[in-house]
Amino acid sequence: MVEDRITDGKRIGQLFASELTGLERGPLGAVSVEDAEPDVEPTAEGAFAFRIAADGDALGTVSVTETTARLELSRSTAFESERGDVTVEEEGRVVVAHSGAAVKALVDAVAASLQ
Image (cartoon, rainbow, N blue to C red; front, side, top):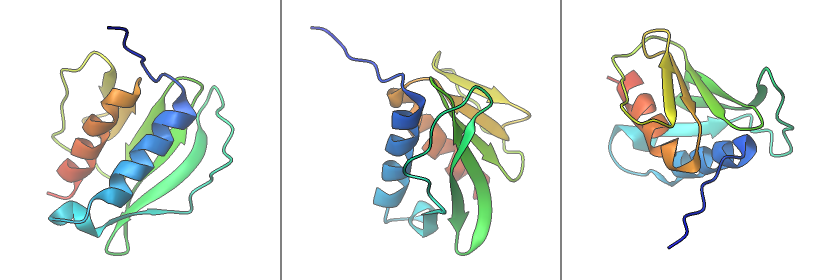
């Protein structure tokens, strides 16, 4: 069986936004995607893709490079990941997804920021 791995940063960001908007229960049900840039062009530094909020409070921003989606939270969390396709920086405040499968880790980081 051949596995396709999504490594396009814009697509990873889109998957993350879709995942967040599809959550309707529990504390993540209050999370929303705001100011989305559907035509964002990834840059080496990371181009702004969208903001994340919960009940009107800003939680963070997402930017995309050619190969990653970078979640920068407004505050540090206790979030950690042992996935090889996820990088956690700045005491859990920045989480970088290097594949589409890593989107679940970004969702977990958003959940950690709500605690």
